[in-house]
Image (cartoon, rainbow, N blue to C red):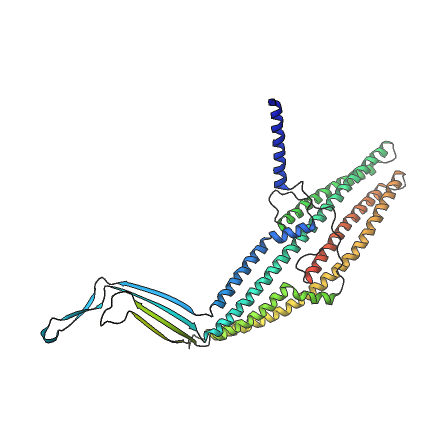
Length: 446
């Protein structure tokens, strides 16, 4: 193979490698992003979900730590002190003998102890604290469910907004093409004397306005795509292309009471219920501080140094009870109980508000969904009517039976009808998802 062939093959290989790198980094030429893909990516990549997962794991470990306080605790201590010199004493000898010297304190003392403590009266507070943390752990679990739900529904709505902006741009580009074609036809009619200069300028103005609307539509599309990329945590530089059609929605029905019943499983309501229970345990914990603390203990002391004085023992073992009771703390325990009672009332009121808000949320979502269904039917027929009217008006204009203003208004009405149909499609899906979320579904169901 000659050098020219080798050079050509090298260039071709380099081009393939560059194309592969571009595809891997941007995904621009991959399959279009579907609504389901957006929901899955939003659910799996959301930083809020990761934060809620970490918070839930911390709550689980906190619960385990609270219940572990029920068992006995073992404490080991060791003390070593250096005094520089021994402390001695002398006893006079018997019958004139030499005094006997003995060590009262060695120059180095080494003592250790092992203490096993088991709370007795404190078990009540410990058990209530364990139950308190169990409820807090369950509440964090509901928070994780809510974070997952918010991420999934947030990605779905971001996708619908991007889809609507994408289709509005398509409509605006089609409007430019129609306005340009009408302007070109007007120029031809003006050249043969069938159209005056004023009407020609109206077509030119309509073309300029269409181009301005298209620029706004492009900006709206880029903004909505940026929101979608944040919702699904797209990689920097990734190019996203959406599917051309939305999936067909499944009608969930219109039974409001059934929807309210389903909504009782929503994480927000369950969190409010758990908070009310937690407030009850907070009162019990506050009352527990009024009980004296009684602990049983076993202690084993050992002298690791030299025995001093009159001997003693290397090891000392004993058992007993320790009692501690704060008989006066300036009323802080009473104030804490009052605070817990007030917080319990606050939690009960919040629970009632949560129930009312969820019921209203179900009613609002259901009514808006039903309205969106009606709007969808009307928008579909309006597009067919507007397109047929524009087709007729084009023919009438070319035959001199319609003014330039009427034709421009007809084209504008057609574009508006098409835009309203796209808006109706996305609103129908949006309110379907909001109704699903209101009735307790954890993520959108297509």
